[in-house]
Length: 59
Length: 287
Image (cartoon, rainbow over all chains, first blue to last red; front, top):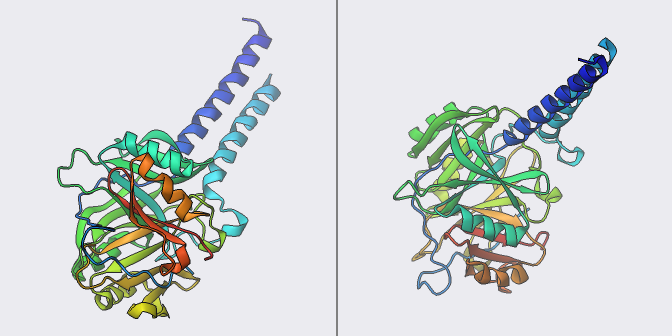
């Protein structure tokens, strides 16, 4: 095999490895992903229940 | 040849380090302690229709989605631009699962915190487990039945910022809607070390601000007698015009639970449900 072709292939291989590792890094960057079953209820307007009274707010 | 190989390796290493640094280096404006207990750091949606959720949140907030896995289970990661913003978990295999957002609170030691939950009258839905290289995490319900995620982060999650640096279409605040506000205050001040102050008493409701040593992290208030809302942690997304955005919700398959109203924070708040029924607050801030 031509020496310059071999060198080029090594360069491409290194870049491909870097891209793959970067991609793996992105995929594992965040998130918990645990499915849970828990009750919830939010009637909202027209449900007949008394809605929450929102005072205050973010600070 | 050796020089070129070394150069190629250096380029590769630099690319990897650059990619990794994106997740480990907080932005200058967000120089915050990633493990400060009581800080909310992540949000996962439980839904039985992942496709409908993607279409809804994609259209409403401009999020885009990436199918991935967490501990070999399917998991959809939502991003705003390049930053991760939330996750979507398919719970269609869980017969009694209710559609809802689970907020994750940062804790210093998740195993210890889960023990505190148990002794304080709460229950464990998912025992502490390692999540890739991200965190050791668990999901619990508090004594009033509200679910909450607990995350002992191993590193900073990119894009998580405090309200003063909040970005539109990202989560930035959360409130505990309590069946028993006094009991909830006792429980959460013990669990996360919060200090609480009352910031508002209008309309006969005390709004408690839960603070860590550095800043306010959440609000807490009492649900009215006869409410049809179960105690829950309600996550807040920052938006510029809640009423205008909410007007699009029915057309996207969601519902407006509480519309904008002058008496409700000067019209700066809307509570919606996504197509699956998961509640979510849209808030303009400052308001």
